[in-house]
Image 1 (cartoon, rainbow, N blue to C red):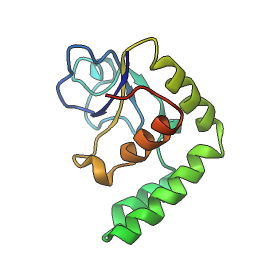
Image 2: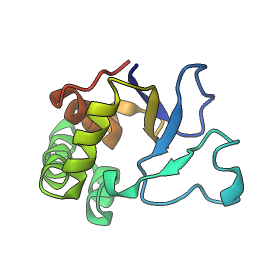
Image 3: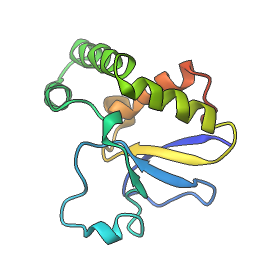
Length: 128
């Protein structure tokens, strides 16, 4: 049992389980009824995405320092809101079932899902 950290829209792994979209917006031009069949997500959980302000900051990050500033602020958002409780729940569930969390970004190292990976790991989640 474990959590997979994935790029939404990429082909699913056979043992990936339910795919959770941790994004602010649904995929453009895709009917809601096709989100799962097109390998985006089965469940949308936007409260694990950065605020609109932080999304803009992440997109504008051009240096390692800019990215680190974004990551610090995003960690603060996740640790001081209801999102913290959701992360705790996902960490516990990772020990009993397979599921995945993801975002659209091509490069995980410059995506909020890299921070989610760290936050889940710190909570004792089992991560692939």
